[in-house]
Image (cartoon, rainbow, N blue to C red; front, side, top):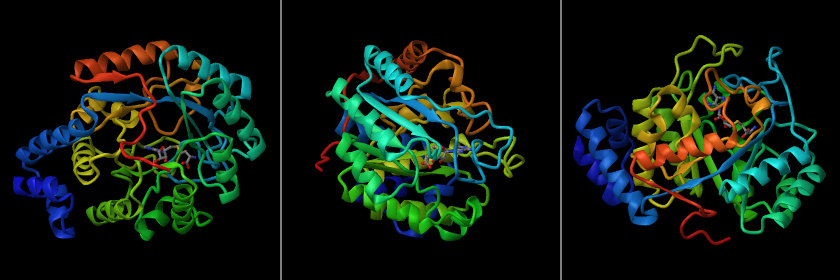
Length: 348
Ligand code: SAH
Protein backbone atom coordinates (compact mmCIF):
# COMPACT_ATOMS: atom_id res chain seq x y z
CA UNK A 1 0.00 0.00 0.00
CA UNK A 2 2.99 2.30 0.43
CA UNK A 3 3.15 2.61 -3.37
CA UNK A 4 -0.04 4.68 -3.17
CA UNK A 5 1.79 7.20 -1.00
CA UNK A 6 4.57 7.43 -3.59
CA UNK A 7 2.05 7.78 -6.39
CA UNK A 8 0.17 10.55 -4.57
CA UNK A 9 3.47 12.26 -3.84
CA UNK A 10 4.61 12.28 -7.47
CA UNK A 11 1.25 12.82 -9.19
CA UNK A 12 -0.53 14.93 -6.55
CA UNK A 13 -3.67 12.89 -7.12
CA UNK A 14 -5.19 9.41 -6.98
CA UNK A 15 -8.37 7.83 -8.31
CA UNK A 16 -11.31 7.56 -5.91
CA UNK A 17 -10.62 3.86 -5.42
CA UNK A 18 -6.94 4.41 -4.67
CA UNK A 19 -7.81 7.28 -2.36
CA UNK A 20 -10.20 5.05 -0.45
CA UNK A 21 -7.51 2.39 -0.02
CA UNK A 22 -5.01 4.98 1.18
CA UNK A 23 -7.43 6.57 3.65
CA UNK A 24 -8.46 3.23 5.15
CA UNK A 25 -5.12 1.32 5.07
CA UNK A 26 -4.32 0.12 8.57
CA UNK A 27 -0.70 -0.66 7.75
CA UNK A 28 1.54 1.47 10.01
CA UNK A 29 4.13 1.64 7.21
CA UNK A 30 1.62 3.74 5.25
CA UNK A 31 1.21 6.22 8.09
CA UNK A 32 4.97 6.47 8.55
CA UNK A 33 5.79 6.95 4.86
CA UNK A 34 3.00 9.48 4.49
CA UNK A 35 4.44 11.47 7.38
CA UNK A 36 7.92 11.42 5.83
CA UNK A 37 6.73 12.45 2.35
CA UNK A 38 4.38 15.14 3.71
CA UNK A 39 7.24 16.61 5.75
CA UNK A 40 9.55 16.62 2.71
CA UNK A 41 6.94 18.36 0.59
CA UNK A 42 6.22 21.06 3.19
CA UNK A 43 9.95 21.65 3.67
CA UNK A 44 10.46 22.08 -0.07
CA UNK A 45 8.27 25.20 -0.03
CA UNK A 46 8.25 26.40 3.56
CA UNK A 47 11.40 24.92 5.08
CA UNK A 48 10.94 24.41 8.79
CA UNK A 49 8.84 27.54 9.21
CA UNK A 50 5.66 27.45 11.23
CA UNK A 51 3.45 30.52 10.94
CA UNK A 52 1.63 31.85 13.98
CA UNK A 53 -1.88 33.29 13.75
CA UNK A 54 -3.26 35.18 16.72
CA UNK A 55 -6.84 33.99 17.12
CA UNK A 56 -9.33 36.48 18.55
CA UNK A 57 -12.70 34.88 19.25
CA UNK A 58 -14.90 37.94 18.94
CA UNK A 59 -18.36 36.56 19.70
CA UNK A 60 -20.15 33.45 20.91
CA UNK A 61 -23.55 34.70 19.75
CA UNK A 62 -24.69 32.82 16.68
CA UNK A 63 -27.85 32.90 14.58
CA UNK A 64 -27.04 29.47 13.15
CA UNK A 65 -27.83 26.10 14.60
CA UNK A 66 -25.16 23.69 13.31
CA UNK A 67 -25.85 20.41 15.08
CA UNK A 68 -22.25 19.79 16.14
CA UNK A 69 -21.41 23.21 17.52
CA UNK A 70 -21.50 24.19 21.20
CA UNK A 71 -22.40 27.82 20.44
CA UNK A 72 -25.38 26.89 18.25
CA UNK A 73 -28.44 29.06 18.75
CA UNK A 74 -30.47 26.29 20.40
CA UNK A 75 -27.92 25.73 23.16
CA UNK A 76 -29.68 27.63 25.91
CA UNK A 77 -26.93 26.73 28.39
CA UNK A 78 -24.26 28.58 26.42
CA UNK A 79 -22.79 31.56 28.21
CA UNK A 80 -22.69 34.26 25.53
CA UNK A 81 -20.27 37.17 25.14
CA UNK A 82 -18.99 39.53 22.53
CA UNK A 83 -15.87 41.67 22.43
CA UNK A 84 -16.17 45.33 21.55
CA UNK A 85 -13.87 47.34 19.30
CA UNK A 86 -11.54 48.40 22.10
CA UNK A 87 -11.19 44.89 23.45
CA UNK A 88 -10.37 43.56 19.98
CA UNK A 89 -7.80 46.31 19.43
CA UNK A 90 -6.21 45.59 22.76
CA UNK A 91 -5.90 41.90 21.79
CA UNK A 92 -4.10 43.03 18.62
CA UNK A 93 -1.82 45.26 20.65
CA UNK A 94 -0.71 42.44 22.94
CA UNK A 95 -0.53 40.08 19.98
CA UNK A 96 1.69 42.43 18.02
CA UNK A 97 4.06 42.73 20.99
CA UNK A 98 4.20 38.93 21.14
CA UNK A 99 5.30 38.83 17.50
CA UNK A 100 2.06 37.93 15.73
CA UNK A 101 1.77 39.30 12.20
CA UNK A 102 -1.61 37.77 11.42
CA UNK A 103 -4.77 38.44 13.39
CA UNK A 104 -7.74 36.14 12.92
CA UNK A 105 -11.12 37.44 14.03
CA UNK A 106 -13.47 34.49 14.40
CA UNK A 107 -16.96 34.29 15.78
CA UNK A 108 -20.48 33.04 15.56
CA UNK A 109 -22.77 34.79 13.10
CA UNK A 110 -23.61 37.72 15.35
CA UNK A 111 -25.74 40.56 13.94
CA UNK A 112 -23.94 43.03 16.22
CA UNK A 113 -20.93 42.77 13.90
CA UNK A 114 -22.61 44.58 11.02
CA UNK A 115 -20.59 45.64 8.01
CA UNK A 116 -20.15 49.12 9.48
CA UNK A 117 -18.90 47.78 12.80
CA UNK A 118 -16.55 45.27 11.14
CA UNK A 119 -15.20 47.75 8.59
CA UNK A 120 -14.43 50.23 11.34
CA UNK A 121 -12.48 47.59 13.31
CA UNK A 122 -10.70 46.23 10.22
CA UNK A 123 -9.61 49.65 8.98
CA UNK A 124 -8.30 50.58 12.42
CA UNK A 125 -6.24 47.36 12.62
CA UNK A 126 -5.03 47.99 9.06
CA UNK A 127 -3.99 51.55 10.00
CA UNK A 128 -2.20 50.56 13.19
CA UNK A 129 -0.53 47.41 11.89
CA UNK A 130 0.16 47.87 8.17
CA UNK A 131 2.61 44.96 8.23
CA UNK A 132 0.03 42.46 9.51
CA UNK A 133 -2.44 40.23 7.69
CA UNK A 134 -6.08 40.44 8.74
CA UNK A 135 -8.05 37.20 8.56
CA UNK A 136 -11.78 36.91 9.11
CA UNK A 137 -13.83 33.86 10.04
CA UNK A 138 -17.35 35.16 10.52
CA UNK A 139 -19.42 32.69 8.57
CA UNK A 140 -21.73 33.33 5.65
CA UNK A 141 -22.32 36.95 4.61
CA UNK A 142 -23.35 38.70 1.42
CA UNK A 143 -21.02 39.45 -1.47
CA UNK A 144 -21.37 43.14 -0.66
CA UNK A 145 -20.36 42.53 2.94
CA UNK A 146 -17.31 40.49 1.92
CA UNK A 147 -16.39 43.21 -0.59
CA UNK A 148 -16.69 46.02 1.94
CA UNK A 149 -14.56 44.18 4.50
CA UNK A 150 -11.95 43.45 1.81
CA UNK A 151 -11.89 47.12 0.86
CA UNK A 152 -11.49 48.03 4.54
CA UNK A 153 -8.29 45.97 4.63
CA UNK A 154 -9.07 42.29 5.25
CA UNK A 155 -6.75 39.85 3.45
CA UNK A 156 -7.96 36.35 4.19
CA UNK A 157 -11.17 34.50 5.05
CA UNK A 158 -11.64 31.13 6.74
CA UNK A 159 -14.93 29.40 5.99
CA UNK A 160 -14.84 25.65 6.29
CA UNK A 161 -17.21 24.10 3.78
CA UNK A 162 -17.87 21.48 6.55
CA UNK A 163 -19.08 18.73 4.18
CA UNK A 164 -19.06 18.71 0.38
CA UNK A 165 -21.49 15.77 0.08
CA UNK A 166 -25.07 17.07 0.22
CA UNK A 167 -26.42 14.20 2.37
CA UNK A 168 -23.76 14.69 5.05
CA UNK A 169 -24.00 18.49 4.91
CA UNK A 170 -27.75 18.23 5.52
CA UNK A 171 -27.39 15.83 8.42
CA UNK A 172 -24.97 18.23 10.17
CA UNK A 173 -26.94 21.43 9.58
CA UNK A 174 -30.50 22.70 9.97
CA UNK A 175 -32.69 23.05 6.87
CA UNK A 176 -32.22 26.80 6.94
CA UNK A 177 -28.59 26.37 5.85
CA UNK A 178 -27.52 25.27 2.40
CA UNK A 179 -24.38 23.71 1.01
CA UNK A 180 -24.90 25.69 -2.17
CA UNK A 181 -24.76 28.98 -0.32
CA UNK A 182 -21.70 27.90 1.65
CA UNK A 183 -19.87 26.94 -1.55
CA UNK A 184 -20.99 30.14 -3.27
CA UNK A 185 -19.58 32.17 -0.39
CA UNK A 186 -16.20 30.48 -0.89
CA UNK A 187 -16.16 31.19 -4.63
CA UNK A 188 -17.23 34.79 -4.01
CA UNK A 189 -14.47 35.30 -1.46
CA UNK A 190 -11.94 33.96 -3.96
CA UNK A 191 -13.23 36.22 -6.71
CA UNK A 192 -12.94 39.22 -4.42
CA UNK A 193 -9.24 38.49 -3.95
CA UNK A 194 -9.23 37.02 -0.46
CA UNK A 195 -6.84 34.22 0.39
CA UNK A 196 -9.44 31.61 1.23
CA UNK A 197 -9.53 28.73 3.67
CA UNK A 198 -12.00 25.83 3.44
CA UNK A 199 -12.08 22.55 5.33
CA UNK A 200 -14.07 20.04 7.31
CA UNK A 201 -14.24 18.04 10.52
CA UNK A 202 -12.75 14.56 10.58
CA UNK A 203 -15.03 11.88 12.00
CA UNK A 204 -18.19 14.00 12.01
CA UNK A 205 -21.26 11.87 12.85
CA UNK A 206 -22.26 9.83 9.81
CA UNK A 207 -19.12 10.70 7.82
CA UNK A 208 -17.93 7.87 5.53
CA UNK A 209 -14.76 7.52 3.48
CA UNK A 210 -16.81 8.45 0.42
CA UNK A 211 -17.83 11.70 2.11
CA UNK A 212 -14.19 12.47 2.84
CA UNK A 213 -13.27 11.82 -0.80
CA UNK A 214 -16.02 14.27 -1.81
CA UNK A 215 -14.37 16.83 0.49
CA UNK A 216 -10.98 16.25 -1.14
CA UNK A 217 -12.52 16.61 -4.62
CA UNK A 218 -14.25 19.84 -3.64
CA UNK A 219 -10.96 21.22 -2.31
CA UNK A 220 -9.30 20.32 -5.62
CA UNK A 221 -11.97 22.27 -7.44
CA UNK A 222 -11.82 25.29 -5.14
CA UNK A 223 -8.02 25.39 -4.80
CA UNK A 224 -8.01 27.30 -1.49
CA UNK A 225 -4.86 28.85 -0.04
CA UNK A 226 -5.61 27.41 3.41
CA UNK A 227 -7.23 24.16 4.51
CA UNK A 228 -8.49 23.72 8.07
CA UNK A 229 -9.29 20.22 9.25
CA UNK A 230 -9.55 18.90 12.77
CA UNK A 231 -11.29 16.06 14.55
CA UNK A 232 -14.96 16.39 15.42
CA UNK A 233 -15.18 16.59 19.22
CA UNK A 234 -18.63 16.15 20.79
CA UNK A 235 -20.15 18.93 22.88
CA UNK A 236 -22.39 17.87 25.77
CA UNK A 237 -25.22 20.33 25.02
CA UNK A 238 -25.70 19.49 21.34
CA UNK A 239 -27.69 16.77 19.55
CA UNK A 240 -24.34 15.04 18.95
CA UNK A 241 -23.43 14.81 22.64
CA UNK A 242 -23.32 11.01 22.57
CA UNK A 243 -21.56 10.62 19.22
CA UNK A 244 -17.99 9.40 18.87
CA UNK A 245 -15.29 11.94 18.12
CA UNK A 246 -12.81 11.87 15.22
CA UNK A 247 -9.51 10.05 15.76
CA UNK A 248 -5.92 11.25 15.83
CA UNK A 249 -4.92 8.57 13.31
CA UNK A 250 -7.47 9.53 10.68
CA UNK A 251 -6.83 13.25 11.12
CA UNK A 252 -3.07 12.73 10.65
CA UNK A 253 -3.70 10.49 7.65
CA UNK A 254 -5.78 13.22 6.01
CA UNK A 255 -3.32 15.98 6.90
CA UNK A 256 -0.57 13.99 5.16
CA UNK A 257 -2.77 13.35 2.12
CA UNK A 258 -3.73 17.04 1.93
CA UNK A 259 -0.09 18.12 2.06
CA UNK A 260 0.72 15.82 -0.88
CA UNK A 261 -2.32 17.00 -2.85
CA UNK A 262 -1.73 20.69 -2.08
CA UNK A 263 2.04 21.18 -1.69
CA UNK A 264 1.83 24.94 -1.05
CA UNK A 265 -1.30 25.16 1.05
CA UNK A 266 -1.28 26.68 4.54
CA UNK A 267 -2.31 23.85 6.82
CA UNK A 268 -2.91 24.46 10.54
CA UNK A 269 -2.31 21.97 13.33
CA UNK A 270 -5.62 22.81 15.01
CA UNK A 271 -6.65 23.27 18.61
CA UNK A 272 -9.12 20.38 18.19
CA UNK A 273 -6.20 18.12 17.27
CA UNK A 274 -4.38 19.28 20.41
CA UNK A 275 -7.56 18.61 22.39
CA UNK A 276 -7.85 14.91 21.50
CA UNK A 277 -4.16 14.18 22.08
CA UNK A 278 -1.53 16.00 24.18
CA UNK A 279 0.93 15.71 21.27
CA UNK A 280 -1.65 16.13 18.52
CA UNK A 281 -0.39 19.47 17.24
CA UNK A 282 3.26 18.35 17.26
CA UNK A 283 2.29 15.24 15.31
CA UNK A 284 0.36 17.47 12.91
CA UNK A 285 3.43 19.64 12.36
CA UNK A 286 5.43 16.53 11.54
CA UNK A 287 2.78 15.43 9.05
CA UNK A 288 2.71 18.47 6.80
CA UNK A 289 1.16 21.22 8.95
CA UNK A 290 2.80 24.65 8.85
CA UNK A 291 0.47 26.90 10.86
CA UNK A 292 -0.62 27.13 14.49
CA UNK A 293 -3.22 29.49 15.87
CA UNK A 294 -2.53 30.51 19.48
CA UNK A 295 -5.45 32.04 21.32
CA UNK A 296 -5.32 35.82 21.82
CA UNK A 297 -8.82 36.22 23.25
CA UNK A 298 -9.10 37.76 26.72
CA UNK A 299 -8.85 34.99 29.32
CA UNK A 300 -12.22 35.81 30.92
CA UNK A 301 -14.10 34.92 27.70
CA UNK A 302 -12.03 31.94 26.55
CA UNK A 303 -14.19 29.27 28.14
CA UNK A 304 -17.29 30.81 26.61
CA UNK A 305 -16.11 30.23 23.03
CA UNK A 306 -17.16 26.71 23.71
CA UNK A 307 -17.37 24.90 20.36
CA UNK A 308 -16.65 21.44 21.79
CA UNK A 309 -15.89 19.79 25.15
CA UNK A 310 -12.48 19.99 26.85
CA UNK A 311 -11.13 22.63 24.46
CA UNK A 312 -7.52 23.34 25.43
CA UNK A 313 -5.78 26.70 25.97
CA UNK A 314 -8.76 28.28 27.73
CA UNK A 315 -6.91 29.19 30.93
CA UNK A 316 -3.65 30.76 29.82
CA UNK A 317 -2.81 34.37 29.07
CA UNK A 318 -1.90 35.13 25.45
CA UNK A 319 1.80 35.32 26.32
CA UNK A 320 1.71 31.89 27.95
CA UNK A 321 -0.07 30.42 24.92
CA UNK A 322 2.50 31.95 22.63
CA UNK A 323 5.43 30.55 24.65
CA UNK A 324 3.82 27.14 25.06
CA UNK A 325 3.30 26.84 21.31
CA UNK A 326 6.80 28.10 20.60
CA UNK A 327 8.17 25.33 22.83
CA UNK A 328 6.03 22.76 21.07
CA UNK A 329 7.13 23.94 17.62
CA UNK A 330 10.81 23.85 18.57
CA UNK A 331 10.49 20.47 20.30
CA UNK A 332 8.93 19.06 17.12
CA UNK A 333 12.00 20.28 15.19
CA UNK A 334 10.54 23.38 13.52
CA UNK A 335 10.99 27.13 13.86
CA UNK A 336 8.59 29.97 14.55
CA UNK A 337 8.25 32.35 11.61
CA UNK A 338 7.63 35.91 12.77
CA UNK A 339 6.07 37.07 9.51
CA UNK A 340 2.69 37.38 7.80
CA UNK A 341 3.10 33.99 6.17
CA UNK A 342 1.09 34.38 3.00
CA UNK A 343 0.46 31.35 0.84
CA UNK A 344 3.45 30.73 -1.44
CA UNK A 345 2.71 31.97 -4.94
CA UNK A 346 -0.50 33.81 -4.01
CA UNK A 347 -1.31 36.81 -6.17
CA UNK A 348 -4.64 38.55 -5.86
N1 SAH B 1 -19.15 30.98 12.40
C1 SAH B 1 -17.90 30.73 11.71
C2 SAH B 1 -16.86 30.10 12.62
C3 SAH B 1 -17.24 28.71 13.07
S1 SAH B 1 -16.23 28.02 14.35
C4 SAH B 1 -18.17 29.91 10.49
O1 SAH B 1 -19.30 29.53 10.25
O2 SAH B 1 -17.25 29.65 9.73
C5 SAH B 1 -14.91 27.33 13.41
C6 SAH B 1 -14.97 25.85 13.10
O3 SAH B 1 -15.04 25.07 14.27
C7 SAH B 1 -16.17 25.40 12.31
O4 SAH B 1 -16.02 25.69 10.95
C8 SAH B 1 -16.25 23.90 12.61
O5 SAH B 1 -15.67 23.13 11.56
C9 SAH B 1 -15.42 23.77 13.90
N2 SAH B 1 -16.24 23.16 14.96
C10 SAH B 1 -17.45 23.53 15.41
N3 SAH B 1 -17.93 22.64 16.30
C11 SAH B 1 -17.00 21.67 16.42
C12 SAH B 1 -16.92 20.46 17.16
N4 SAH B 1 -17.90 20.07 17.95
N5 SAH B 1 -15.80 19.71 17.03
C13 SAH B 1 -14.79 20.10 16.23
N6 SAH B 1 -14.82 21.21 15.49
C14 SAH B 1 -15.92 22.00 15.58
